[in-house]
Image 1: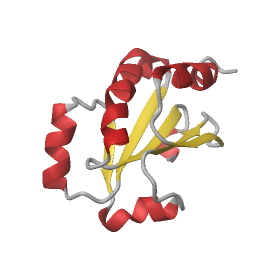
Image 2: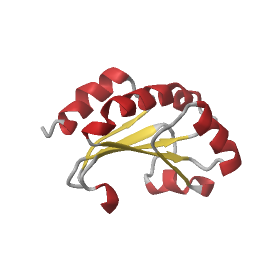
Image 3: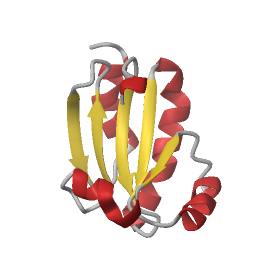
Image 4: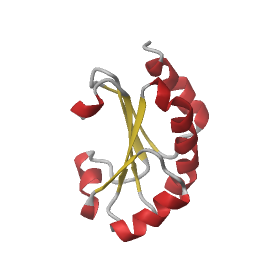
Length: 120
């Protein structure tokens, strides 16, 4: 995470096989496209699906942000939330500011994320 210290980071735990995860990916892609220049970084952590199944998913949804793979759901266990999608927002100083479980929508991103991107 030290590499992203100057960014506002959205860590999103997701799974290729979960309908709410599939539903929120286009929202995350569009929001990233609109705000990456403002210091937004998204790290999408897939819940344990093998690379050969994740890669076509990433290509299909044209995911422009970082995608990490963790076998056997280790990331979900580390976050102690085994119900993807779940997300965590880390500010530019490395402090976790927000957390939620479930599909995220554009309105929620704008309401809670935009002030962090603006430095508020």
